[in-house]
Length: 280
Image 1 (tube, helix red, strand yellow):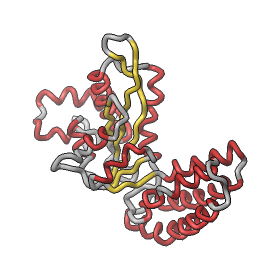
Image 2 (spheres, helix red, strand yellow):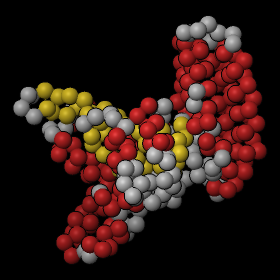
Image 3 (cartoon, helix red, strand yellow):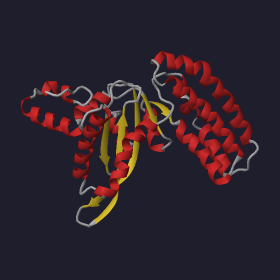
Image 4 (tube, one colour):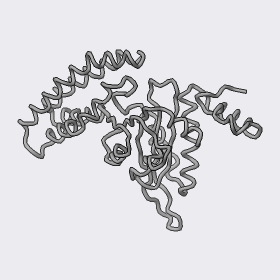
C-alpha cells in the first residue's frame, strides 16, 4: 500500500475525491460518518493506479497529509478535484488546482431538468462542444491534446465566459440560475486549467468511476468495525481495484503476490504493484 501511494506521488497530475462510509464507534454500538478518500492517475496516464485512504473526517488535512505537503517531500503538481472547499488549502502549499467541468455542467443540467430553464439548456450546448472536443483527442498524445485545446476549446470557453457574465446581469439574486452561473465564474481559472496542460483532464469523472464500487459496496458491508479495520479494508481495495483497472484477475493477482512475498526482496517490492506485475 505504501509503495502504491509512493508511486502515485511520482506523477504530476492526480485526481482526488471522497465518499462517506459508516464506522462503528468503539464501545457505543453506533456508527458515525467516516470517509474514504480516493487518489488516482488520470485515464490518459499509462500507469493505472488508485489508492483509497480511510479517514475519520472529511477535513482537507487528510489530503495534505497524503500529499505530504507539510514535509520536505511535498508533492508538486496539478490536483483535479470537484469544488469541495477542503482542497483549497492545498493550493496554498504549492499545488495547482484544476476543477471538474462535469460538476459545473451538473448545475445547469439540474436547471434544465427541474425548471425547464432556457439558460440551463443553452449552457449545456457549450459543455457539449467542450466534451465533444475531448472525445476527439482522448487517444492523442499530450502535446497534441494541448494544441487542439488551444485551438478549439479556448475559443468555446471565451464565448462561454462572455455569455455567463451577460446572463448573470439578467437573473435575480439568490435564484438557482445565478447560483449555477456563480459556481462556474468563481472557479473559472481552475475549471479551464485543462486548456494549458494536455495531461490535465477536463473532468474528475475518472476518479468518480474508481470510487463508485465503494459507494455501491456500502450496502453490502454496511460499516467499518473500527478505524484500523477501515484502513486495512482501504489498503486491500486499493490493490484489488488497481489490479482490476490494469486488466488483471484480482484473485490471480493476490494469490501470486501472497505466494511470492515471503521470499521477495523488499527493495524490489515495486515489481509487485498491479501496473508492473506479471505472473511468476
